[in-house]
Figure 1: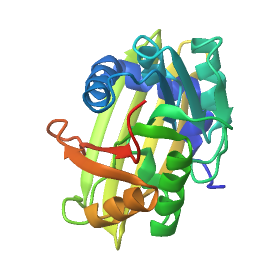
Figure 2: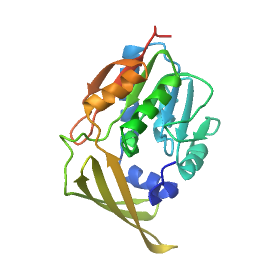
Figure 3: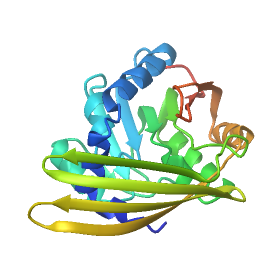
Figure 4: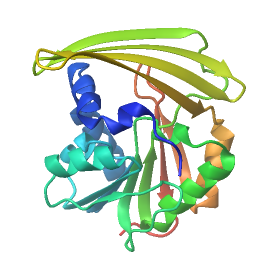
Length: 246
């Protein structure tokens, strides 16, 4: 099981930062639902892999009668359970979890797939997704960047204030071979606790489109399309499992 960066043990900080940054969870979920309906109009169940604090799931639950989530980080699952009482949420690794049931949709968003260390792990994850899909089910993966469009030496910074807590995040990303190495510095401040600092290190694989296509095909998922999602976003890969839509 992969070692988690410190931010994934601080779910409230993570959640507050992306809320303050106005991450478009609702708009993303609506767009993904549209792509799913185009391929499987009757889809009624959805599994969100690497579901984090459950914000996408919260919106998916408006469109799909049954939703579940799985995430490697126990603290993120804890916060998601608070947000989504009654929704089955599971702690597990995306390469080898087994929930004992199948779904009409499997999503893996926010470029979480990039944390897989190599092509072998990518293939294992897509096979795991495929084992959890009904015939005609739809897989939606938000990839990380590829070797040809990965930027090196990129610096980004944001400061947000949410519910009386100010969070500063500054990152520096470089290309090292077939990986992005992202160093992140956080400052978190509030009136009661003062200021604290922690550092994150993220290693994200730069898989090629051919490697993604091969992983989808090896899992019995075809008709894979790449969908643009706007400037500064890595797009989506959308595929359909073998068999007629349910």
